[in-house]
Length: 124
Image 1 (tube, rainbow, N blue to C red):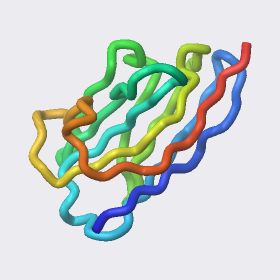
Image 2: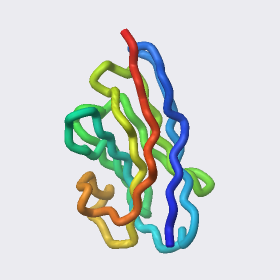
Image 3: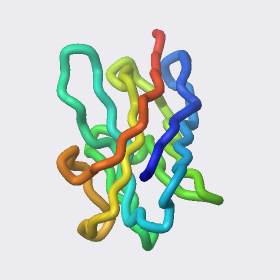
């Protein structure tokens, strides 16, 4: 069994930064790719950034150049810079044991394991 726990959300002013963390508990050796998703009120959950087992990454067009995804010592991180009002959402960590394309996947259907989410709020 795999459990994901996110942390690091909060409220910042527009243009500010946050770093979200995700820790994996359980059968961590089985995880081949991970990603961050977000869901704003009334909207569908969307992929933001993904990373595969080799460290290759991919990003949604809306966050390219502003968000960074990386792994270190058993944690997966999402660094959010130059935050905008449109970034307001609940952010979720996801992981899966199946093979994914280079850079991982931004498709919700590609992930079996999900965290509970951490809220990001941006004020103007």
